[in-house]
Length: 425
Image: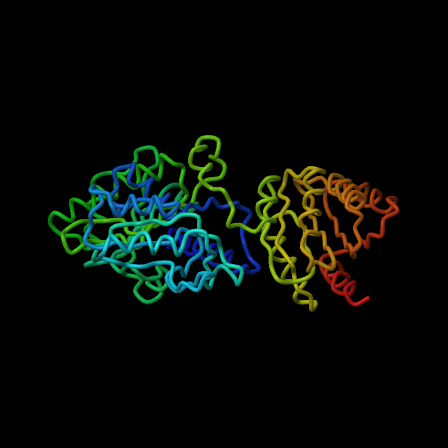
């Protein structure tokens, strides 16, 4: 179950991130639009729907008139990262970010109603997301759906194939209700995927005859792409077969190893981060990990576990965390300064809690960064600081002699209690 648990953890993180929940891991996830994922797969010889991209009305007209893109039915999909596009509404009143039509003459008008307008879905918030491009694709009839994922699993110390003949639904629900319908293949990362492994997975997914051969071939190509682009997960749901006998990857979710960005520059350049919160974009520039929430106590910590514990204890004492901001283990004074700038850019933040356990982190570095930040941004809201670990005594001395109105805390609970109380003064 280790591979499945990893899938569940990653899926849960993405869901919580989109819902701005108080939990995450310290990774800046690269998000690709649907058409970008499909292009990656198509370039690798993987079967996807025929598609073209329109960024304005003229390009949509060209697509509709293209002789090499005549299909029985078109699906027109607004390209944003948020889910729920089909049930969304545009700021011009047009309903639905996903439409079907058999008439190519309808394509330009549908695209025109989407591009340049904000699409509001259950995941975007009331402000919506500006649609800059629309994917026009071939609509296919799915005869049968399966689930396929390839992921790096820590316990397996390498890649794992995870598949189920029950596709088109949450894999977590399949695992709960039908655990026997989950199949795994552990791949030797040095040897690579073997033919017998791909064939066995195709069999377990229920492909027969010529479609079995297609599925096995697609599984091997997906694995090769997974390794080539330094992915940590490729999830295909559904990995299905059409009524005309094709095996197709209908939808894909890629996760990439941020540490491989220097090898995958062309892929990482695809992420303009424009759909991210401006504070997330600023944090990413400085190698900080930030997720905003709805509370009023800004939290600066080092380490994902400490961050989650800090938010929990703030809530335990009656407060509401305004964010998750992890400065990591190699933090510099400049990063601390930038972190304070990000925290105070949120008008809802009425107090700041710094909770640092200095193992790798030098508490002196944090203290100097706090001192400089308070002076540079002229901090006007309460600041509670709890430091523990490497060079903590000299760090506390720096803060104590700074002449700044900083409230020290002795321990975890004391820090949370003082932060919450500061809002009542």
